[in-house]
Image 1 (cartoon, rainbow, N blue to C red):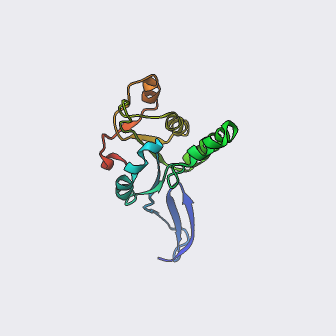
Image 2: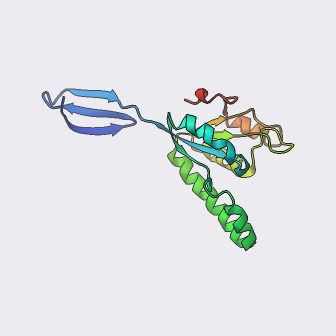
Length: 167
């Protein structure tokens, strides 16, 4: 079959058959879903083995400043205004990324005395994912704390470290 014309319709391609112009063939083109990894910068060191597994099945977007985790510290040293601008720019950037992806994976590990830690910016990214109807996967169980009920309200999928649970 020769494709004369194709039109993408929500992940489907409709192609007109070259021999019979009234005959349409639809077929699903396997497209990788887009996944955004979100977490505290303290967990960036745990990303490489997770990334290695996930990039086989998904198009991955890494956390803000993943390649330069000390960026925020440098802005803090510049003063309150510069740090505030940096933080607001990163929050806005995350929302733009979230609009373009299919799902987020929250990496929540122990951070000092906090079990399964989810920080402020990660919580905001989860909220944006919820607002934009994105699937939220959480690596470990929801942490105890003042935001637990709100996180439960996001209806996340807890994968307990099993990356195969991400669909």
